[in-house]
Image (cartoon, rainbow, N blue to C red; front, top):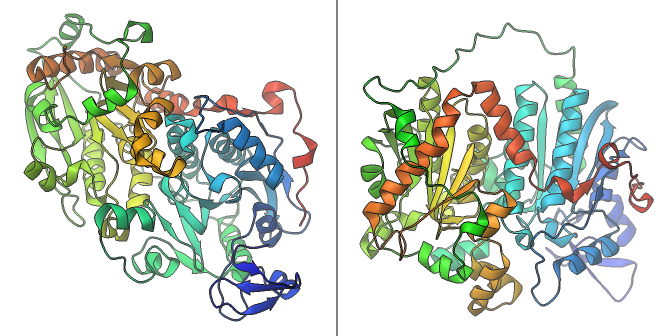
Length: 595
């Protein structure tokens, strides 16, 4: 039964959640679970959605078997693996997404359809891997790719690995777009968090089903975090369309026809072949003659690449150290670790977010672009910088400077220190989710070296938007997490006081991140942390950036992009068995999808 309706005394009738009208159940199903009285669109499952959208008997599921991936051995009183198996039994689905090929109007496509009934449609490693494999199949067979989204966000039980799925899926869709293949997302209710800030909004065409809600932060988070009053229809499909965040709002009964028209226009042989303009290769970075950057880098090797060399410290203590107001900020580090930093402001569209600073500088004789989150040391500074919570204009500014660096052939260095992206009403109105999605996708394709350093707090998609890099470093007392420990404990235990327990479960500390390959190396801190000796901390960061950056200067642009894609492609790949990789066939109970 659709969540749009509630059960009545008679199993033959359902009550609309919106207008409370009683609707005959069979009529409700014939109407695609849309209330015939008020038009409210109820939630439907992946199988039902496929039956509504695809030509009859045309869907062929991909032979993919999720493996029960539990990288953190996560437990909130009940093991994550048990919850996952329960979701499979209850829904009859392999994961929160159903993937395969099919036809609409006789035209073949690759399709991935999410299902909210499977752990809230959360994006975990297996779901991300399945969507990526479907996009790769589309690329191999030159098919258009359609993804139907519904999700509460990234799956916190898998920690930062679930965050990596945002990058992995975004890169896969970016490759389809560069190959000239149509990509379409159909946003259904609800679509939030990491899904909204990745493949739901970085396709060529974004359709919103009537009544669908989409946003980076959910309404409850916005209210609780900011205290702002939410405007009528906040994050709903009409709200999104009025602000230019979706191409069309489409009623469920018209979605199939709309997709058919899109596929017809994009069909091979229908597109005129226009001559492509020549692409000018960015100049390779050229160190100034009076400096020897190789010698400068060789003078001090500081990076720790073996987790056994790191000092043990309770993860919650690291969270507290990462948030210490005495730690050097991006502006502090730009002044000491880099040379001749010149800040550039504005996104050339709306304004300038003070929570992100960006500009040009040099380091060891190498000209670079520097982009980073900016907090502050005092309450006044924190307020003026939005506590390091960047609004959309901040990410647009960051991308503007990165694209300038690409045109000039300059490497990019990013410094990450944020609790996350800004959750306010204005940020949502200006498309926070789609801006982050664009940043992830665009950064993955930069044809210059990129080094990212988590210098304090790396929070969720707001951090990832500046951390899609060739080398990702983290300082010894930094943290990188899919959700704050307070947020995790409030959701799972309904008690924010359990934040220390959540910190220990989320795998946010440098040792865990280094073992998982999320970060490539750790930058040591002075005794007592960077706040105890900011000067030494800046000098160490300078040496660390050079150590990571200099080997990348000799790598050709095409290879840089390919390596970066391969880096993120590998995260969570073992969460799904593929016959071509394992020789095993998909479990037959999931192989057939009724119309």
